[in-house]
Image (tube, rainbow, N blue to C red):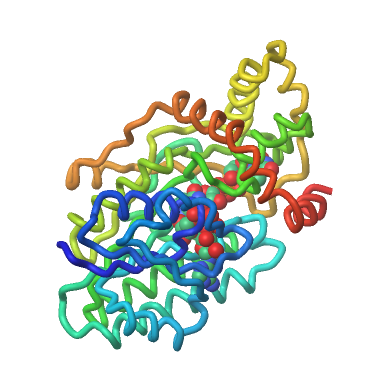
Length: 348
Ligand code: NAD
Ligand code: DAU
């Protein structure tokens, strides 16, 4: 596959910016068109290092607008789609589900419809990026595989599950050449500080309380965002049409152990006495319908496509903390204004 015009939606967000960077730098014969609405989570400062590359173009726009999408497909002669644009934060989906339903379900349907109407042969890929949350919640044992039944439990995960079903329906009904992947929790640079890891790093730095939902015993399977971007590259180029791949880190942590680990790392980096930051830990009201445990079995992508995570978690956390400490201006920009309102409403 070369000389492609690849539309990446949501490329100004956390994961999207890592995917755009990888594709722009690695595939010089392809054109990468980044389409993003620039919601509170989208930030062009995530991409300043590649914004002037000749094979990169940014288009501001909303996947809720089908006519606009059709226009972009026509003007840019789009050959492939990697679809990441979404409302992505579970807590926001609980306080306001409609934006999730419209962007994640209707927005995905718009993209599918435009691809179906513009693509007349098989020489295309519509790659939909999804989440392990569609599978629901695990008990102490077991893993999510590609065969696990869907059981989404938050408005966010239900909207992502709906979009996954639509993508598969377009494959079965219209033979649209689709691929899907469902990934576990990502961490790394440029993540908006409403999500656990950057929120805790920012609060530790500023000596603010560290809000742990419920008992802190909920488990997440953490993956370095650049490893997710590498998996997306491998699936886009080598994955089978019509197939789904689970992506995970084989790296389960309870929230409380993870936050304690971050406190240790930051005590050392900030020159604080050991145990100082952990005193900021505060147990708060649990998230409504809080899923207990997520854990991915990534055997299929490992065996079929040769992908495995590259980075040990402690090294990844260390790099992540360094990035946030070194990028004070980035964090100050995104935590001013609306973030303060969100934070005080959500954590009051
Ligand atoms: P994010 O919230 O950081 O970024 C989402 C991006 O989509 C932003 O740039 C935003 O401006 C854009 N966007 C939102 N609504 C849009 C619209 N209507 N039209 C165009 N652009 C719009 O999200 P993220 O964490 O980078 O997640 C990206 C994708 O990966 C999502 O589909 C998410 O479901 C999926 N995912 C995320 C994780 C994770 O741990 N963060 C794990 C698995 C899958
Ligand atoms: O599993 C993949 C999913 O991971 C993605 O699809 C989502 O887009 C992404 O946001 C993430 O969802 P989570 O809800 O797991 O991530 P979050 O960082 O919001 O929370 C991680 C865990 O930490 C979860 O158990 C809730 C808990 N938590 C979170 C916050 C923000 C707290 O205890 N306190 C907090 O303040």
